Length: 455
Ligand code: NAD
Image 1: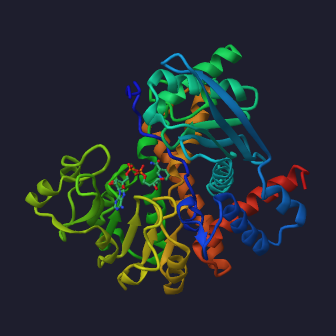
Image 2: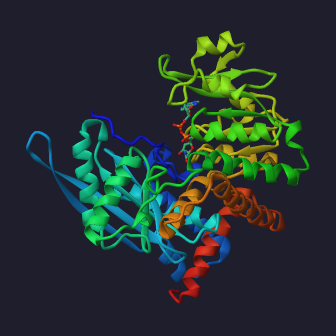
């Protein structure tokens, strides 16, 4: 497949926000549920806790709008193929919809509906004035040329050009879409509307309407919340050690900032492509980030022979969770802290900060709650990414771009106040942090719907 010409990292805002909800594990007692049903049942629980009235429940259980359309594409061999595209706008009571566009062969409308709903809650918990949306095309970019992908991007925009835009619904990259796809979409939107509208879409490269700080935003955002949690628990960062699963974009910047605060990372685990399994790399005196980055590939895999040569112990992949540390940061993939391994978490662990989406299964979550470990839930801990996308949108709408310090200062302020709001509610009402985060997010959206007179 010809490579796309712009290769910024994909801006994955949210694949899922709760371990209970990831499509890969939605099978119970032999019965399959789809992710939308699970998102709805999770919403139902929060709605019950908040005592929402029937009309508000009925409104928020479903998307406000959804668009299903065909995208005809003339393929390179001269034939015409019809691709199916979607855009779901779950709720825009708090502001324009926000959410990525996924290119995936197994895309379904119910996955897109669930992801749109989760974006509504994620934007609300960090209190950015955006709603939740998601889009997708059923296709496999691995089997498509760059020209064919461009035609899909342009066709997607042509079908919804009147229903998306800087003041209504702002897409972004997601699974298998990147900055190049966003630029093709922006160009098509601008051709149709006759002007420059860089605020139509985010995830653009810096210099073409992208924001400085977006690459760092998710990892740094996580550490801003971690820093506040440590303060609350009366623990000094320099007296802590951490073990991290993942060595990609989120982990990289989380490690960098945590180390700058004085913390020591003693183990990271990552996937080894050649062996088809993961390994944990441990150095009890603390890993050296630049050293490990110099022997890692662009997918966040570490060269194990070189690591051994540099004095790292090579342990089994799952051992990251057993380390005797104060802080665990799952920042790789979903479904990693399970009923099977939660019991291996050291008694010394005080905080789990979820960088990945849905890293914890419901069974493990119940035990973490029981043990009183302070959990910073995924859709709060990793919301730095979407927060910086919001900053990109604001800068694009003004056509005036901020320096790195300004972006990161604003990110810190947003993440810190979001953390405080969740933690304050958790303490006041003796709630688990994940439940408090959901209560705040759903409560804010419900209130906006009431304030507008919708319900
Ligand atoms: P990435 O692709 O850059 O890195 C993923 C890392 O996880 C790699 O080091 C890989 O080796 C490792 N990994 C994969 N499978 C593993 C396994 N079984 N055991 C141990 N390590 C494994 O991804 P990323 O952008 O850092 O994202 C990580 C997580 O954070 C994902 O769940 C993503 O959805 C979520 N997230 C990312 C962003 C963002 O802005 N990048 C925003 C919100 C949420």
